[in-house]
Image: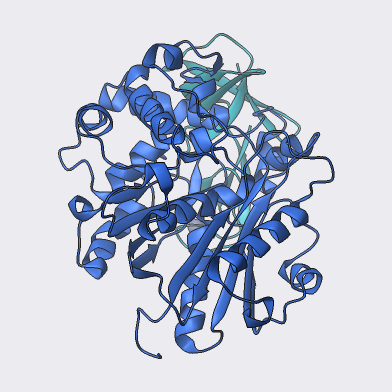
Length: 379
Length: 85
Ligand SMILES: [Zn+2]
């Protein structure tokens, strides 16, 4: 298999039911264990087959992947922690597939999950990194909403967008969520209801912000079996040192290389997943990927979210399915793999063969610093 | 408020970095900036803004006035927290 860039494949993908009201006794490690058991069952594998384990979580601390290996009873030859939030899923996949190609492991389980209770979410956002604790928490910013409110204001001004333009994306994602039994918000949503949702920080209203949930996601990356293959994977983190306008991500710099490696372009994608912490950033990533060649973001939203909709964030995205902390970085991968394996039930995109998934996140100071993307192909 | 200026090349940053983005030096001096231009503002628990300092860095600050984007604001610090008025 060495030298064959497509040797690794994703043979199973699962998500534990996301919930805003987790059952008593739920902890981050019980969620991760639940995802582990479910994904092995999905892959038809035994615990003894697992020789690689990767974990992404904010709240698993002070434990690490090795604690989980011990408590789950696996003996990995390849072990990795990755706490890079919205980029962690693709980050783990990147490393796992290289490990398999190099022969360091044959069957890797990747887990991602978080559980928030009481003050733990506020504690996380106030202590997200040293810089936040030192110069943002005292303002208080109270988390990333105010930062992305300012970025959204700038995007609106630069592109002549109105709130209803973002509403088209949010409403379209809610339509998908209605077909996903795992989404926390599934009730149909109108543009009027979107516009009337309570204000958070102008121009962001509640429906522009992800609902925080408890949950976990998992993938099995394997050297054998039928599965989804990786055509291309690229990443660029800290592309501008937090000194740009925040409306262009590292994706813009590597998109040409990504599509070149994939021997495909945006127009070839049957399913798309972009990291939707906020509608403005989902839109920015779509533009960075090359989905808006004429630069007309408003026209793109009308065209591809209403008139002839593109299959974007078909789980409902984090905006409707929920954001389980770090698992938000694996949520899109799980959804797209599910689509490419033809197991997406009512929301199955017909003949889905090629898909692109992005990761974005880690707000160091003003906006997300991490960016990656992967082009996936059905078996 | 204080920003950090590279003693080798004069590049200013805020917040603090370990190595200068331009020249790689780890030697910084603190320099006080008294004014800046408010580029964006938003209301949440308090008013929060993005202020362009004359040395270059864009700082996220608490705003303790009703200044609107485009206005010049004075800059101060409450402990490590930047303030604009
Ligand atoms: Zn310097």
